[in-house]
Image (cartoon, rainbow, N blue to C red; front, side, top):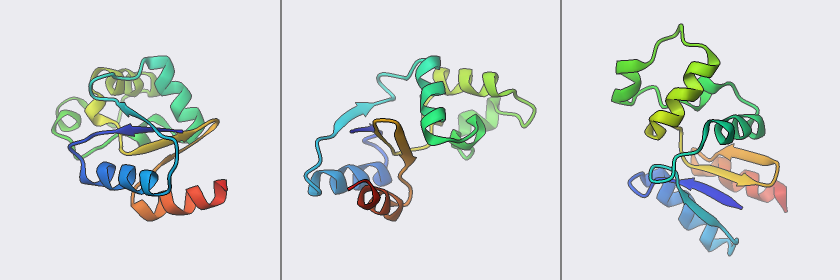
Amino acid sequence: MKILHNAHCSKSRECLAFLKEEDLNVEVVDYLKNPPTIEEIKELLRKLAIKPIELVRKKEAIWKEVGKDTLSDEEIIALLHQYPKLIERPIIIDGERAIIARPLSVAQEWIKTAE
């Protein structure tokens, strides 16, 4: 199991603490220091079963500067790669499944169904 984690985000820290409390073997990926490749973002979108725009943190200043409703999926994916801060967080990945674990109750329910 992996968590795409931002240590500066309280929701991400809360989710990571929960996963550790559950005694799960979790690989922590600091996606700001190690941004996912375009192919990794596409794979993540497939696992999440969402469109690229649904992965965007639209309140980020960067999005307000560069984001537009007219961008194609490929353009959005390129922006997510270039500006990983735009990626919604935290994200838990477990094999072929993934979830945006926000709020924490979403992660808690998802972990229960995986057992």
